[in-house]
Length: 79
Image (cartoon, rainbow, N blue to C red; front, top):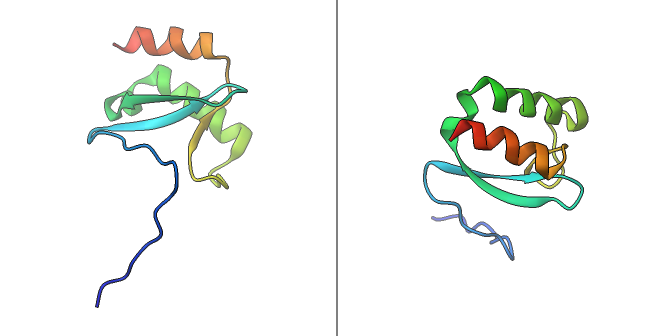
């Protein structure tokens, strides 16, 4: 017997090896490689998210509470 899970309407697929984050007040979506998770600069951004939202996100998405310009500056250093 199979269990059917409801499909999330409007969900965008993320390629294998990547994940989506939502940044800034406008919650702009960025798809980035999972390798960023190991980098200290990106871990600092994750710390901001933890401080602001904790580990319980009602929407289930990873939100990073910083300006898009700062986020882009940090992630450009990771590439």
